[in-house]
Structures are given as structure tokens and as C-alpha cells.
Length: 149
Image (cartoon, rainbow, N blue to C red; front, side, top):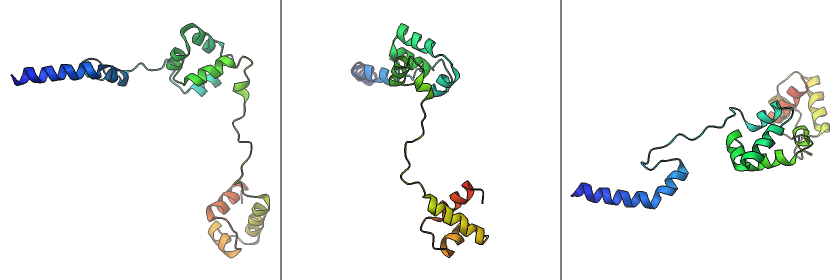
């Protein structure tokens, strides 16, 4: 009696939530199914860098669709759209360096730190306190390291 009531409630539960479970990667028996791994075993930017002409990526996307291509190559739909749109190959050559660095240490301060280090051979923390340098000790250390001092 108890088993049949349990089975009934279990079946009702599965019928209500089966689509939700499938979206999470479970099958109808609530067992986790193995998701399809991308065909390429490296990040999309590595794939894009390794290929001189990414027309085959565009071809795959045009043949099977953007979603399928994104799944196949393990990247987002927006990345596939970028590849399709980029006929001239300019995306590959675009610099990722920021246009400006507002928090960069000024050259005057860097020169002062280097000058102070030239006067006395001491560490970053001692230099900061001895010469009243208005930045953190780690900043002083990085400036020294960057300038091989």
C-alpha cells in the first residue's frame, strides 16, 4: 500500500518537473547524464589564435547554426557572432591593452623611488618610511622590481 502511494507521488513529481531536470542534464530516471564535451579541448581564444584563417569556424556556424557552433567549440554565441562578422580578420589583431591606466604610479614618483634606492641600499618598506614616500610599500617594491633595482 505504502509503496504504491509513494510510486504515484513519485510519478506525479517526475511529470511536473521532468523538463526542469532535463535542462539540468538529468534523464527521466533522475540520473545525471553525461553532457556533450566540446569538440575542441582548448579555450576559444586559443582555437582562434591557432588558426590563421577561421573561415571553417564561420562555415560550421553557417551550416549548423550559431548555437550549435558555440556548443561545439565551447564558447559563447556572441563570440561566434563576432567571428562571423569579422571577415577581414581584424578581431584577431585587436589589442586587449587598456587605453589608459588612471591608477598608474606617476613617473615623478618612480624616479624619486629609484633615486632614493640609489642613495641607500634598503628594502621597499624602509625606503617608504625613511624618505616619506606616499604610496604603499608593495608599490615601492614593484617599482624597484620593474626597474631592476
